[in-house]
Length: 300
Image (cartoon, rainbow, N blue to C red; front, side, top):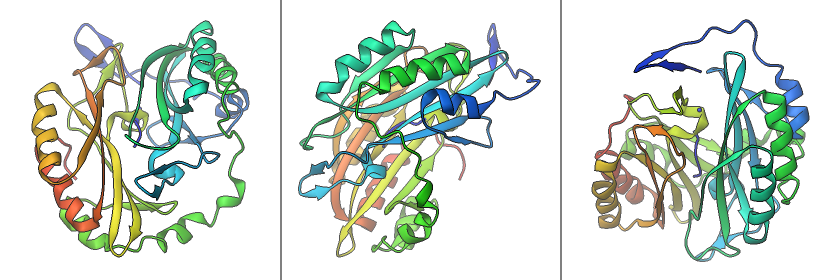
């Protein structure tokens, strides 16, 4: 699942200080500059979803839903007079270099580029980014980069009734999955999702990174029939957790498909582990819980 992440706060020496804001940025102008509107979240972050609904990607015979493994995003977090932006955009191989060149020329930092899955057709790559400054200027730069991809930028105005419909598409036992994981999931676009924050405060470049900017564990279940589900997502780990979590996943029949960074100056240093399996949903949930038990998580 892509980060999320993800996602204001300033640090003086080793002390985190919460800034005060006279007014929030005009998010309507930010959305206009980006070319797509988003949602102002309770933690103050403005988040714009960028799912690759234009792509038809399959893996091991499973047709992947956009919200399952193709859900890019951009998130803006105000910090005093400026704004921090982070994102995770989904690209095809031929889109990577043009988008990267344009973002780099516009002052947007590229903090990671990698796969999430193995054997998927066509192959998708995930580009993480970071920027600081005026939010409209940042959004304008991001628009210029995204314009060199085929990322759909239209808002899904007709999707108002989608959440109720998506809940009916989850044909495995969600109660059993919730019980196994020890947390409550949520149906979204035919995918059953968990967002689980870590216990620590995460910072990047001296600024606190909220959960909505990609610092939480993301777990997605996509029904594949007969009580089975495909799973993917990412575990957000400190160094000492990487191999215990990897071992727990593999011992439970869950394939580890990538281990990498998403940020450059994060504290504590984080590693993101992506995974894949397609099996009985409750069985996979128990395997995921075995991995979650190796991590320092916030209380549910």
